[in-house]
Image (spheres, rainbow, N blue to C red):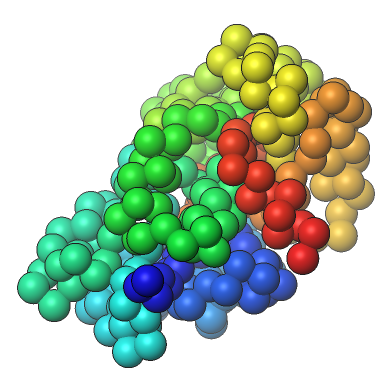
Length: 305
């Protein structure tokens, strides 16, 4: 049986404990460009530093995908100890990094050894697939088989994100300056959704309180319509994410309790900051919730370890 390694980027916001528990062989960091200087999340860019940069009107913050040579070097290093790699990374709908990696995996030195999962996920929905990949490695599956499973189940999730300000959506070109100005004047709070790997508009409300209620309603409706049987069988999990600057802020705990209270019949999976490249578009103080399907029992297995 071939020895399979799990390599990821940091689009799922795994903790150091999870990286160790899931036996992640390598993490390839996602880059940021701040005033023409490159930084990497979790390497030379802290959570606090990022939001300081983001709020500074004189500072230009943008995202950049890891260089393909950095990715290849990571693969080469891992293949010294492993026979195959399953690479789980950011949705191809949010970055070209996935398609670039897929093309690189067909280079002669990596063909048949590196398998890139185009699973179109991010944040806690990608986290569950990393759990599942780790579980399938434990079950003795090949990297090819794991890639196929992750891609076959890529749509079994949903995320809703409430944005506190239109400023950063305007900056990223997702709303026009005129629409942003009117929305700011009226204190409109957009709700975004991620389905199929893309960040799209879902609804607009007049307060974050209304946004919270709307997201809970949307998540409940989607679970009931798409996965009623999986919910009955305990194979659905709800989660939260956020771009709140202070990780000890009571807002995070309150949102977590809101979600748990609204879904007392569905287990809770993850509570994590939104990946910083998503926060570039949402800005500070965004709140997100959603669900994931876990048919394998991977969450239960690793949470018992």
